[in-house]
Image (cartoon, rainbow, N blue to C red):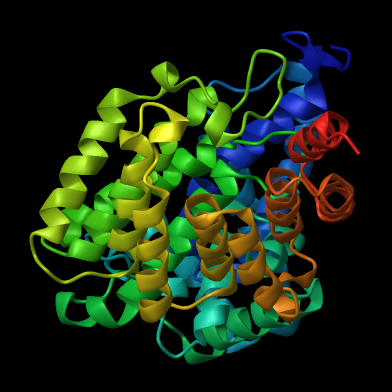
Amino acid sequence: MGTIDRIAGRPAAEIIGAAFRREYGRVFASLVAYLGDFELAEDALQEAFATALSRWSDKGIPERPGAWLTTVARNVAVDWVRHSAMAARKSTELKHLEELERPDPRRIDDFPDDRLRLIFTCCHPSLSESAQVALTLRSLCGLTTADIARLFLVPESTVAQRLVRAKRKIRVAKIPYQVPDPDALPERLATVLEVVYLLFTEGYAATSGHRMVRRPLTDEAIRLARLLHQLMPSNPEIMGLLALMLLHDSRRDARVNARGELIALAEQDRTMWDDAAISEGTALLDRALERRLPGPYQIQAAIAALHAQARRAAQTDWSQIAQLYTRLMELQPSPVAALNRAVAIGMSSGPERGLEELDLLADEGALQNYHRLHAARGELLRRAGRAAEAVGALRKAVELTHNELEVRALQKRIAETDV
């Protein structure tokens, strides 16, 4: 049979790549559970993908692509370990081969989800927090080093070093692949929640590529948050995180129009928002706030709820949003939170006041190359009637943006600005 160049009217490589990305997290988590080695699992999965590109292009995508990839990757890994063991005759490698050929089910705890187990493994307290987050994002959903660097607002080389060190430490320290006992959950929870939200963020507003939304990532983040809620149903920050993601996700169908153009929040058709997701998110937030233990995710969910409750953009309570961002900065200061606070001040107290706040952030190293700082500055300058300066700021944002939809939206904004 000849090679299939197109599947359902789309390039075969594109379809296969999408299937691989969709299955990556589940297959990788299963491989780590089986192999007990991050690097071996990663290399074997890449080899399986290379095989898939060849075979699926000839025969089409199998009915269960995840199971196919898992089987091929496991066989590849076992072959590698066997050849290495037979060549070196090292007792450790021979023992590993024996374990792989006769897997011991007791190695895996009773928790039913490999992906959540993988998160808790990556978020072991012996690793630095930044390494925990980077490793989980890389392992769980296959984000590239460049993607993670943009999420962290740090150089790509910094992330690469963190990943190498983290994987080495897990291997050397023999960190177990399991969800910890209940009394050990709290010390890892903050990082686990951060990872889940960053996973959602990359899916909700992709840092690169030609799509704004990567639904497999947003769906996976929400699914993981629901599992965490099942594990710790009374934890208000878990409820806050799940509420926050549901409230954001409620707007997904209104964010891009039929022509594939990105629609700003103020211009979205709010009748397209998902009322069921808004209701669920608001109810979760209310239950969390009843516990009177406010945390960063609850505050961010409260901000998202204020947006969701405004049925017209003009009804948005920007003054209260600015106050909530001030409170967020007290609990969890970050450059992005400071940027959002400045925008909210600009919307509630006038663009010039918002620009004053942005000027205070302009010298921060983490934000200098962050396109949303310059985009926000351009929008406030437009509102202040300073068109020429606005165009300059928006052009700077275009230079720094890696997502094609955001680039087009910014270019449209430039064209609409009278200089």
